[in-house]
Length: 196
Image (cartoon, rainbow, N blue to C red; front, side, top):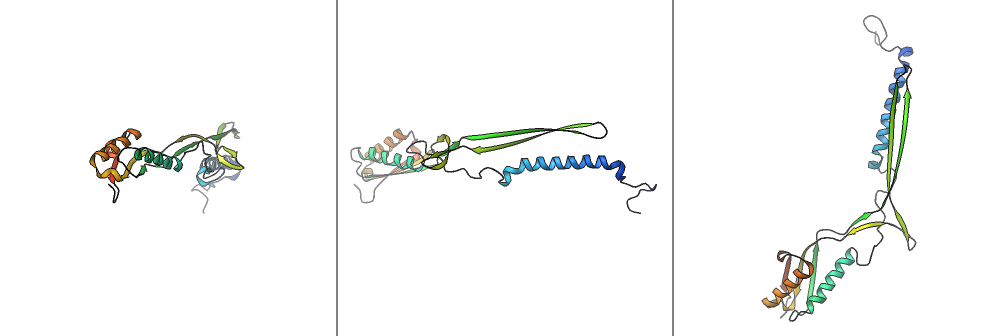
């Protein structure tokens, strides 16, 4: 007969095993609750999945910084004797990087369970929640930027009318290398079409 052993005893004695059954059920529920708490950030529960747009820490950040740098370099290079009209193209490894201020909330709860046989079990549940700090700027909520890192310059292309002359081309290349602290292999100066 199902549910009995060879000696005729029932496999589950509900009256005697009830306390053990409830203990195991509570352990399983505690493990499931802990798993849900730990996995909550991966399923988008609570908090923002994407931070709000960053507050501009200063003028000239991001793409403005790149455009400002190119304009400044063009102005300087055009002032060099024989350079003529100059266009500068800057290549960056990546965009600017921002470190946002975060508010961390940690909740810790201790559970002490006692079973019918006098044993105790202590469980500690920890829940962490990180939220990006926002500030109100001009009626708009923006993420608070703690630190901004400008992108790394990967290379420079200079197109100049006077680059048809080797001396001017070399002078422009050295000027870019010096102004931006770049090695020679990251700077290229070429003549403008119809220049010279």
